[in-house]
Length: 81
Image (cartoon, rainbow, N blue to C red; front, side):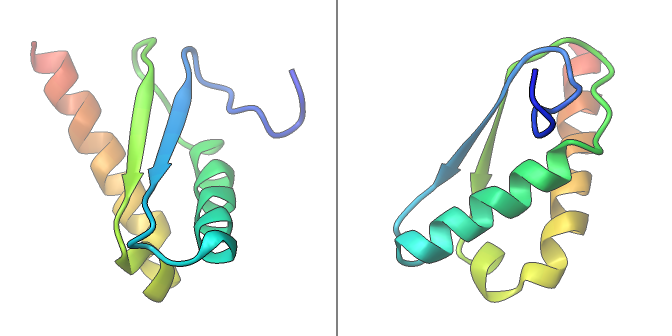
């Protein structure tokens, strides 16, 4: 396990389409997401896929809040199943 691996059981994958921007922009968004996921808690072991939308590149200040909100909602729905 390296320093950048998320401390969550399971795995996290990222989908960043070309609509987000060019390769440099998409990689920057993926790096930001990887950094943010490290601090998020996973209540149950799960494999998670995070899809970045175009505002992830144009409004990076919202990325942390949007990711945390979506993360909580996803695990709340998973717990209800």
